[in-house]
Image (cartoon, rainbow, N blue to C red):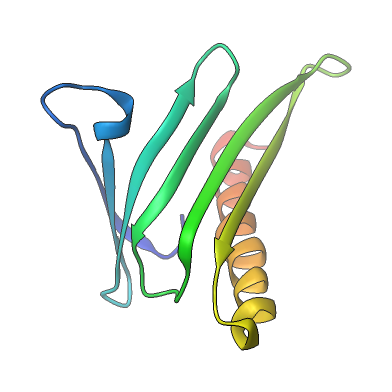
Length: 115
């Protein structure tokens, strides 16, 4: 992710999925903490919530899902989120999250895997 300078996975001793936390430090010094809510290698998805963020969102839950595309041996990636925010910030946050965070992640994967 372009804006992330450090990402740490904090694994609880029980190693239960919902005990896994991720701590991001951003270039501007901000911090984002996430909690893993669901993970399936078989169904190829992960779902997480944001516990702490400077974005101004609440009840943020996102899912990243991969679906095989058999024609051309490719993978379709879908990343979606639901959250609450102040009504006057909704359009801005949708743009920042969809166009910045999600698209930035997709672009980074393309560069890493040459797609």
